[in-house]
Every structure is written in C-alpha cells, then in structure tokens.
Image 1 (cartoon, rainbow, N blue to C red):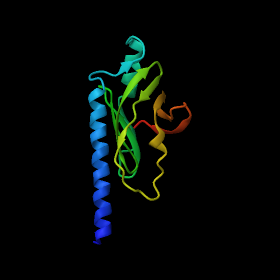
Image 2: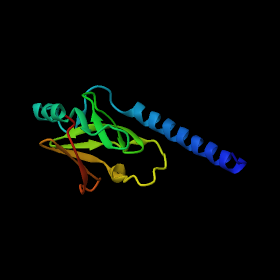
Image 3: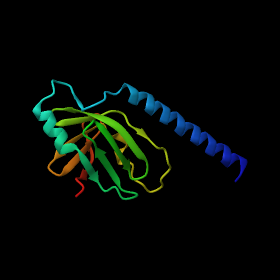
Image 4: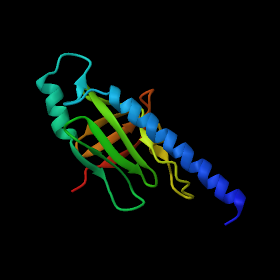
Length: 143
C-alpha cells in the first residue's frame, strides 16, 4: 500500500472517529426512556409508537431499512452506511433527530435516506420525509 493511500485511510479513520464522538456527545443530551412529544403524552402518541416499533424495509445487506425501538431509538442503514438516531412523536408525525452515520463510499447505492428528518405511517408503509415535509421515499413493514 502506498504512503499516500495509507495516509488517506488514516485521515478517513480519524474523521469517522470524530463523527462517532460527536454522535456520542449528541446522544448524551437526548432524553432517556420513552419517546417525547411536543405536547403532553397521550394515548394517541402511545398508539403511534406501538405502530412504529419494529423493522421497516429489508435488513439484508445492501438494502435500506430502519428499526424503531419503544425507547425512542432508531437504527438502520441507507443500503450502505449505518444510521443511528432518536425520534419523538408529534401527533401523526414522527420527527427524527440528525443522525450519526458511517461514511463508507458505496458506488451505485442510492442514498435517498440521507435527508430523513421525519416519518409518517400509512398502513404498512413508512413514508420517509425531509425537513420541509417533502416525501423522499418509503419502506414497507418487514414481515
């Protein structure tokens, strides 16, 4: 391996480490426990969380997917890079905090999920939206 390539790899690892530290720092400010709501917790919010929890998409290698937990965490992949964040329920809308992600180069992978900031549930389909509310795509509930 050339010195230039080795140096470039070390820089890449340093950047990845920095992002991991920033993600960890952001995570310490996130509330623990159940997802939060902009209004008082209600049975409607609890019903949304109940519908939301689980796997959306296909968690096979190279496939985009998101998994929501009852304690407000989201883990998944855009088909190449891992994603982790938290969510809060706001009526029918579920808002996602900025996410931490790995930074692998993945030629040919459509990274449409990079702009995800909110989701809505439409039956067995999770509608992925950006910060402005524009639809980016969707994921079906895993069986």
